[in-house]
Length: 414
Ligand SMILES: [Cu+2]
Image (cartoon, rainbow, N blue to C red; front, side, top):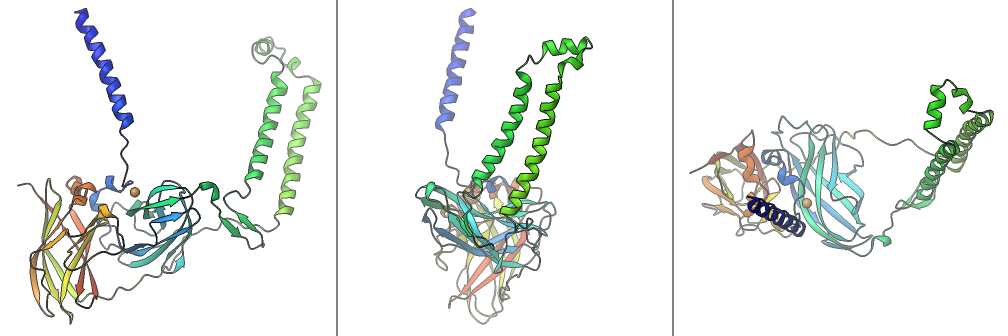
């Protein structure tokens, strides 16, 4: 019996060690940072990011990268996400590996929160300046007050160089140029150390004498007054007076060194200009849409009517950052993140040009590993099985039409 116990103990120890070893060697490189775990239907039905462009994939410290693109605030915004009355255009990076030099929506600088309108499309630009060397997965994202972070597609950008070279100069309206990376650092240190030292000095003054037991007994014996001498009272007054004097003197000297200061600038920006995408002359009706469980594809039956004057073909279906393209019609040249781009993931039963005036019903299949990797397949766990996305149609002259679709998405198990 004892032998068996020993064996169990020994093997559990071995198992424990093996687990430790395995977990310490297992270091997956995270390629998505938060969005995968969010509800699939929310990612499909909140903000549609498109026409994204990254000016560079590799930069040196102090160099700038510009991310531009458009986003559409989906009409069927989910109930559980507060409307984007107060939203903030952010970037999703692990701390300030880049700093944000500027960000714009509709050409307006947006350092503060903005009010976005449901159903509208906006263009944006974010200018980042490289700070910390490494490979970083950079997302554009929108923070919605009462709703949470809405994460756009992430792209890997490499920064080379050394962080010690990083500079962040800014010229104030008082005419001096400072480096925000280090500005006021010494001053902050000085005052914190100074006051901390005074606090310590006060404590040390008292604990030179026995601190606890003898004092406790004296108080118990009703002789508390003898614990504080006249000299102690003078020292206490000295500390109190010095503290008040130093605060007043330091404050007035700070005021004379920095005579012009302003309060923090804040407040939501209203009246952000949306863009007008030309009204699509293609009309699409989603007859039904489904996805296999388990599986990596969704299928939909679309009735497409071309009301324009040029023949068009379906080139792309976008949903939740994932782009499914029909390689015969359209190729991406923007360097869209590989794991989100299905170069030839869109299959249309008949994708010959749809002539002006023609109506055609087609079976469309969007399939790619991304459907599973980015857990859009997890819509099976969502309380609202509806999807939304954008369809991009192209005519033979390179003209593009964007049609938004939105319909229930029904699972099929057999
Ligand atoms: Cu990421």
